[in-house]
Image (tube, rainbow, N blue to C red; front, side, top):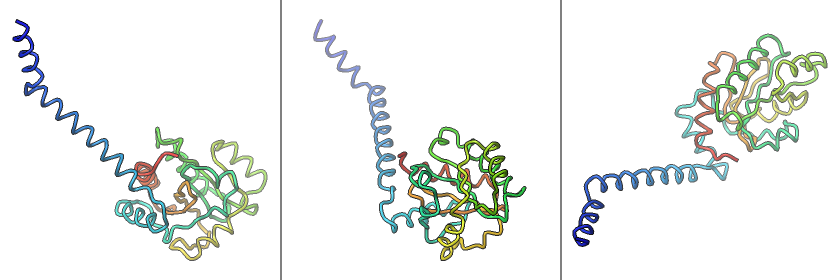
Length: 211
């Protein structure tokens, strides 16, 4: 009797149904392991690797590539530069006029739409004292409490970008994607669909480690 029971259990464990479940489990484990390995291998450690990654992602990006990627740490305040978050940086324009305000509002909407990824990014507005006096600064800070506002560093940013594909005279407001290492890699003008920024950020954060 016990021998029959043992044979029955052995037969059940080797049934086609159980074999199929085991195969599915192994397939899932292999898929998860492959995704983790691919994510690890894609993390750039050198400038050359970073540029190769940007070129790879650039096949589907909505923004324009900044070539070469520019380290803008010196244009940012220390607290912002030391942050390990991705940055949506708004800059340019003669003043923070209606078009500038609209860019800030649009990028805020993009930040909100990032959903669970929202904590991995922050918004920064880079201006100077000529663009943003004390009263305007207070009004902007009140309207956008989660926006980091700088009244310095704009001329430094222009100098840093002068030899890149984003060389511009600051006459219009633009926004860009900056990595946690403070490399400016993508930029957008007011003529671009701001939802392209959302697509690019989601794509980039998908393949970058959460630090």
